[in-house]
Length: 133
Image 1 (cartoon, rainbow, N blue to C red):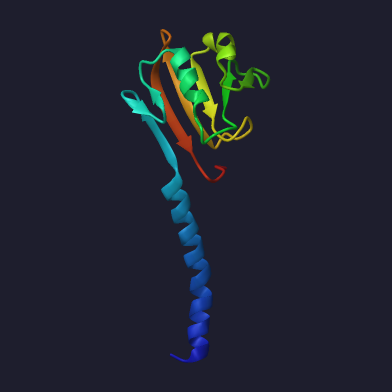
Image 2: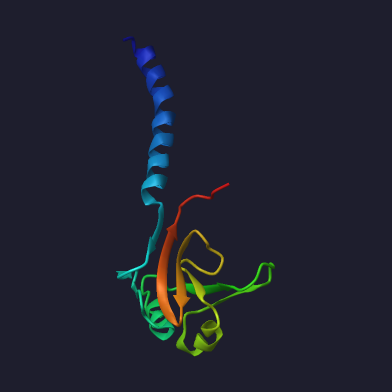
């Protein structure tokens, strides 16, 4: 193979390999899983709301974590609060909490907690490093 042909092949393969590598990275880091028994991400199935709030508060590697509550279909039917014990009254009435791990406006990295009869029954983890169209 002549030198200019080798350079041409490398120039054509480099972008293809870069796109394939980036796509592989996005696929490898994507999480979308549900836990209905045991423990996951610091939360335990069967725990009370107070215990779950304490676990959310102790997410030490996520200092900007907030609890996001959506309670209706309209745009303004939601609120975000810090996972503090003094806020438990605001959270008691809601059976689904989304713990946004990277802040109140970041929905790409979250843990959805579902309650039934004041006990945690489902932990759903969602993390993506890309925007879905």
